Amino acid sequence: MNFFAVDGITGAFFGRDSGFSEGLFSSLNCSKFVGDDLESVKRNLEFVRKSIGTEKLVTLNQIHSAKCIIVDENSDSDQEADALVTQSENIALGILTADCVPVLLFDPMQKIIGAAHAGWKGAKGGVIQNTVEKMISLGSNCEDIMSVIGPCVHVESYEVGEDFLGNFPAEYFSKINSKYHFDVVKFCRDKLKEKGNSKISVVDIDTYKNHEKYFSFRYARKNTNGICGRNISVICIKSTS
Image (cartoon, one colour):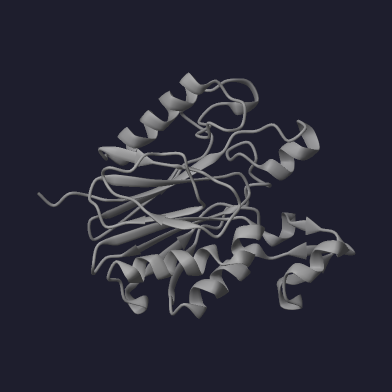
């Protein structure tokens, strides 16, 4: 896993290790919606919560949308959305991915955090911009928001067909071995920049190339009929009291 901490805000990108799931979901699958044993998933989520050191972990039933919600200590998991923000302490926000882009955002000045699941549909629809806007609605300033793009499929592994090209501007495509490839990381980074976010870090891990350490749907689609778990990315505000 990859941890970071800035001014009382802690984030982490978890891979497949250290969980309780078995088989194709081995071992830290954190999604309740992919066919894994639910008790194993609950144990995995509890492991993540304890690892990040927080009182509560909120995750979503992700629907590849641009919907972002505000949560607090009274919010339940499994609401249908693809991003969430909070200003409440000791609540970890969790985003689930298996090649899609996890984006963790934080404002260390106002102590406001966000997490977004940016699949290509959500990214195209504006999930990143909506997350930033929700943070602003809670009191953040654009220039204070920092973000980290986590492990996801990178351009070398993101082959697409010609029918996909119309979804994004030509600058986000390149040809590798005569095949079109989509640079979803660059697209997400540019959306953050357009919202005034210049403090952007990228975790240089391609989930497809590192499928033994991270769940990768594209790899699973070629090898296990698309059956695979989901990685979790989390961020929380630690209590100062």
